[in-house]
Length: 270
Length: 298
Image (cartoon, rainbow over all chains, first blue to last red; front, top):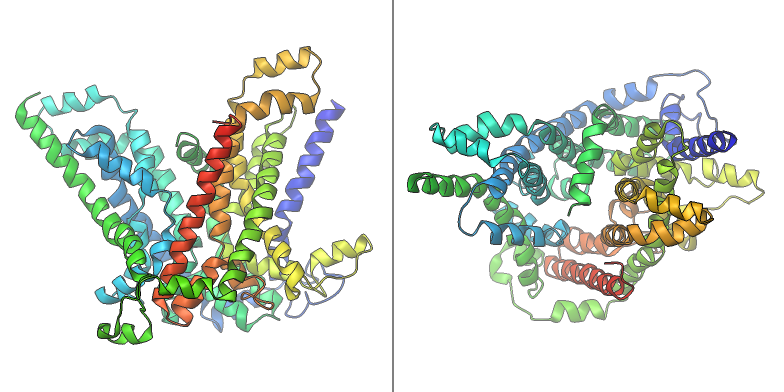
């Protein structure tokens, strides 16, 4: 019994240590400007204030960046689902010549990091005239090989007899996808949506490259720019970090069951 | 099953994969391939303005990189992350997984989510937070070290401590992901075998060494490969925390590529850096696979 409590206490200590940066971030964000630049560092605000958040949204237009992030991540999620779900299903269940060869090529391509093509992709989008636009920021999310892979794995468990029966009854392939496959895919759709939303929300390098107009900045890009100008304003920067981190952290906590099981489906079987 | 059905199925198959395949071809495969071609050209700001200024220069970009000490410094910094970071992150995530997999632990689900949380947070935001944690005068880390009698360290302002400080942040940010992968592997380890070893009088370390570790060896390899790729792709961390400094001590290969491409607009040279980066990841992964085969992990 004692060992059990000792183990739990030790784990709690480790968890506290790991979460400390996030806890302190929230605490400092409620401190008055300048309060955190003291030694020893204060753990809690002496009189909690929302002033940093007011400054962020009032003077620095963080509301605009928040909106940009919401728009880009929502569209990325929607488009990624639209592109990867039918493909994943087709690779799992529809017979067409060349299917297996194409799928194997896609799996092999998973080892190629996306950054390799970033410079030519920038030139390509410049030629297409969509550099410095939401469309430019969205482009990498359309080409989600991992999503196709995930949907395919899940679709393999749909009984083929069910699809055949629908075909005999005269259903078109499109109807089968909408009426039979999509409802069965619900859990994996939530997982995939969460992956793409978190991924695009947290992404930094591509938006930094493709978005030059400050009005289009997503939160991470805006925060990095702010941090360069306001190194001294700890309380303000912590509030900015809270605004950036909180939406995805909450989303993850609410849907963590889906996220973690999806992670396992994608990593261990592969 | 009639011929019409088969035809309809094949048509639907291509129709449903075509949008995704087009996107992958246009925005992933084509740029990756173009990167190789671009790396043999002198694509710069003049070519950006007028394509007539573009010339094929063969391996000149590569030759110039090999002769550039700044490139080698970036390579060295990145290799430093690979050499020290991969063992650190693998060990930390395996340790965490063993901890939250323990049968006698209470509220296991809570601890798993808590330890995973840093992974889903926004990198830039947490890098800003860690900058503050690492602050020389009033950072929490120096305060804690002060309690142990250690004098304040200028973590990010000193070339010899900037890399370790960033690695600490990287490890904090990423170990949760590997922990979940390890956790899945640990749950597949046979309890019977462990119990048999226990009955035979094997202690915790012996059981881990002779039962658990061989069983999860392929997962250790997978995690090591994923972590190597992650270490080679560090960019936002030095960009936000140190801007590559002090004295370029935290410029990574990807940071160098970004500078070549979007600061100096040497896109040809930047593409060569990207391609070298890819070859490095590929080479290290192949070596890992070979070593794993030799020691019988796969």
